[in-house]
Length: 489
Ligand code: ATP
Ligand code: MG
Image 1 (tube, protein in one colour):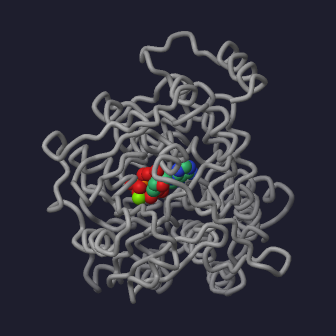
Image 2 (cartoon, helix red, strand yellow):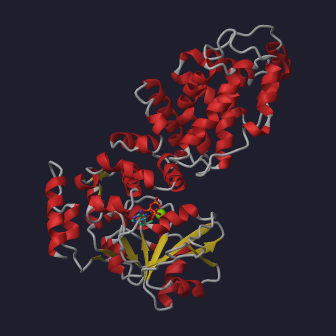
Image 3 (cartoon, rainbow, N blue to C red):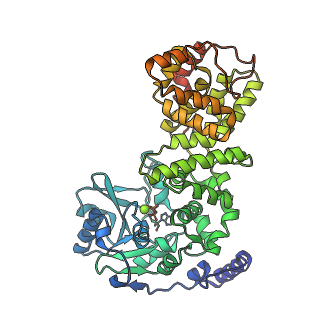
């Protein structure tokens, strides 16, 4: 290390040192005094067994080893197995180059633009095989690539690749957290630990490798990963890893919205959404993902509604049920949409026109932070637009048609959610709940009722004079629900 760099680093330590550092070995110390000899934890001293690793991953590990390469399970797979959790997927690191990997497996595809990764396909399961890679101080391009796959990005007409292959040791130091840098060696079933990940697993501590400020600058998504892993694993953030989160969130503005979309799904839709939300708010990061929603969080009703939907989502994930991002995004953005619509109504738009326009504008603005894929924009807007229909079309054929609308269930669940945090919608939610329990004759009778009471949130007196027939016509027009919010929208 150059003397200049040493001075800069010691200044950084003085200025960025948090008040207390309970752990004697801080993240900064780790980067200063990198041990070159790893700690090797032999098979009998750890809990990872091949029985708990996907048989396809084991097959890939052995095929690489038998061909004379080094082969390790790495990342979340090792971490989760050591914590007695079921890993989401199994990633492999090797000294074989991507082309070598491709030659070993018929079912292999190379992906990635700058850094090539091998994907070995086994039906629905993909085992990702990455060549050891050195730390080159740039953002994790392969991570960005993954978010871009399918969009066919080519720079200046050329596909640019700057493969920076490295050693096992270099590969360990370029990873994000110590607990994500443990390697299970298929050659002798030991775990290789360069960065102190094993003691951190035992202490349930999440510690960024190297200088946290520099590592967050290189790739600001690591801040979201810090919050996500702390939530998912129920780990404590080590003070040096935690401290910069409070002040570095604005760097997320440089991350492509498509990558932030992927991260948002992992934060909120994988079973620990309530904790992720709390973490994002604690460190001031939520505003860099959902700025307009954040502006309304001081209103307890808004925060409660978001917490409710996240709690339901966590419960569904725990029960193995499916979850949809459209519903979550609809809940997150509902208040900004309503506020915008109210402004438009004051300018003379009908309630319906205002809602359509507000849905579009808010969606468009939101997509500058976190992308909203087309199909999701569609379901989100249908849920919102159906709220107005649920408020208005309580009689006649329209009510019965609504019951059979493909997105009735989502819209009704959304109405329930609104009712849970705002008693003004209670009666309406109960009406639609009752309607679903009736037989054909009872339904006929109830929906034939001449007059129906309106929920307080429906249009103001005299402001909107359109009949419900007109409402339906407008709602069914494709152009109101057809376009999504891409990055460039
Ligand atoms: P999970 O799959 O459970 O979300 P994971 O740790 O496997 O967790 P992945 O996103 O699958 O996370 O990444 C695999 C590994 O790649 C990580 O464990 C880490 O070692 C490394 N990695 C991923 N993203 C980054 C990043 N932004 N910076 C540095 N290393 C990263
Ligand atoms: Mg993983």
